[in-house]
Image (cartoon, rainbow over the protein chains, first blue to last red):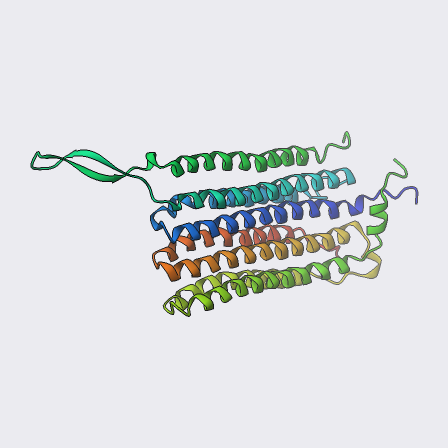
Length: 192
Length: 175
């Protein structure tokens, strides 16, 4: 009993860390994609030409799934008891790495979803019509009506939405960085 | 270092790896199918409702239903792969470190695939429902919203990739 070290059960925590990384990141990516996708579809009914421009939140949410995939693959290829002994320390390090990346990805995904949904719905309003002077072929100067996106306050708020999305994506990046640092600590518990 | 252990390990080492394997395989197929079904009913109810006034959308929007169904198929494939990895081991070797690790690997692989497909199916279902409703309003929107749906269905593929990588770790001790 006194020589039981528990190292046989270390892979349980390691594999569960890989599972946590992928599952929670997928949860965040799914929430972000679905919530902002509904906003894009709702806005697209009124302004179909702006749908492709509004796919930015969806792409940013998809990247969260890739962060989780990276950590899950790093962890599951790091569990190799035939090459290097796998102690409880390594199991807990991998568990914490996976939880860090996964839960950060979940929260970032929820932020991206809510901000993306609110932001793309700003574009529903029509852009302002301005008249600009143009020169026709017969050299007669005249005025033409033109949709000027820079005059539309909603367009400037769209740029603000992109900035907010970048800050939200940075949260998932923090989780990825900490996850990589933690999983690199596995294998450093003994001097051998 | 005598006595260096945790009570979690004391509890875990008493559970047979076959328990973990069986639960993992069941979760991989059961929860994937749950996700697919959830997505299909979300999309299907919106599609049928919108098709009352715009019957032209029905055949095109079946693609969204098929994206949800693909998630269930991923679960079936991984469950079949995992159950071929199960081997019988003599009872003296069941609690050896190698067979414990094999049981944990199957369990984690099943959880990954099951829950990734659950959230993927939900996501694709919600977007498919918006796709049907916006297609009923304006048919040029169908392809654009389908692009968002493709982003959503990639999440299920991530789960399958990691599940297969992890199932390569399964090696039972030889007799």
